[in-house]
Image 1 (cartoon, rainbow, N blue to C red):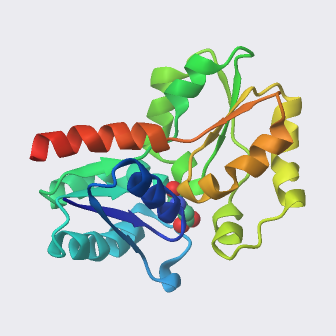
Image 2 (image 1 turned 90 degrees about the vertical axis):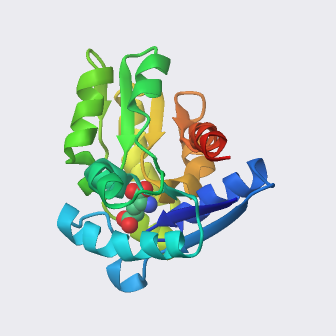
Image 3 (image 1 turned 135 degrees about the horizontal axis):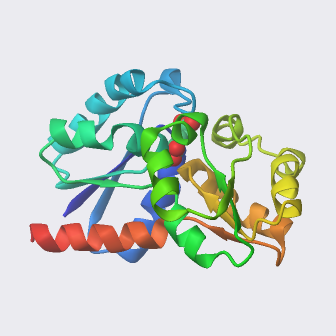
Amino acid sequence: MKIGVFDSGVGGLSVAKAIERELPEHEVVFRHDSPEHFPYATKTPDELFGYVVPVVQSLVDDGCQVVLIACNTVTTTLILRLREHFSTPLIAVEPMVKPAAELTKSGVIAVCATPTTLTSPRYGELKRLYAQGVTVLEPDCADWSVLIEHNTMNQARLREEIEPVLEAGADVIVLGCTHYHWIKSEIQVISGDKAEVIQPENAIITELKRAIAQLV
Ligand code: DGL
């Protein structure tokens, strides 16, 4: 089966590679938006809808039977609208607020995500539903996806945001943007044994397997 994977840029590629590793019997078609539309980090839902629909449509036209929207910025703002638009099953990634709230022992977690994700109603809902009584820190990662896309992320910029959340007691750090998957090990090194850094690739694979089973 052809599995489509969509993102604004290289974030989705890290997820596409994980799917290829775990589901080698399927063909993964990764497609990202054009550089003129990048980054999605600060775009409005309406701008994003206009960008996303043609690219996802091209995956559907190329025979993808299921499409992973490998972009938290899109899913937290638009997944319901996209599911109304497309009849093809769409798998969503979301910031792992619930697993982080279950994992934390200190009662403090940090969510690294884009400004559009952090201001989305869905993200607010995730906190209300799953993080009552947990302190949720949101470091300023507004420029991270651009730095990662252009391979110019550096230790100093990472430490600037990660060290304060560690000092504030965060023991779980959520990577709520697929671009950040590429720098998970660097963040884990900075965090040492103070915090566990989590991202959703395993959950995505499980969800994809479930969707595929319903299609075959
Ligand atoms: N990779 C995307 C996400 O998961 C957004 C990156 C961007 O375009 O700013 O949120």
